[in-house]
Image (tube, rainbow, N blue to C red; front, top):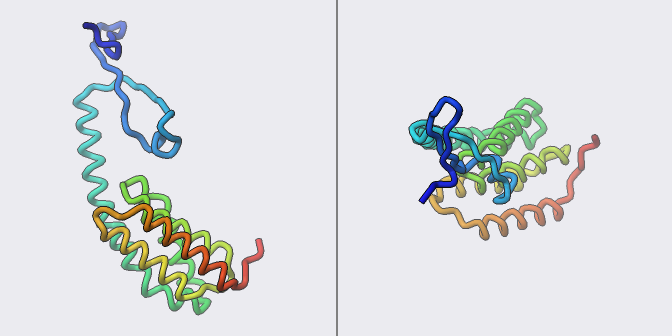
Length: 169
């Protein structure tokens, strides 16, 4: 039986088409297809590298979240430097957490960034709850997506209830 994914190029090199789990597929959905020719040894090396980077990123992510609590009070008191640092860390987490296997942490970071982008004055309770949710999601080896969704919804309701001065721009 022939393998429909096997072929030889013009130099006679045997290759096999495979589907790689990719960031694009996770972000664009299961219908995204990008077949490529890849030596299985290269695929194994890529998978090992991704695994190593994911483990290292978990340590980095934990350290980033640890940097947030000391910034909350100062950022909410209107100290621009602290607010900028808090936002920069949350923005970094928002962009990378999902890529390295922590999408729920990324969701809370995205919510925090959205809150900070639309408010002139920050509420310590709201910012603190976001940071606690990020830490809890990271520390839980199997975070519950439905619980995370409900927590995000509760944060949105809290934000709406507190009102606050919205940023102009």
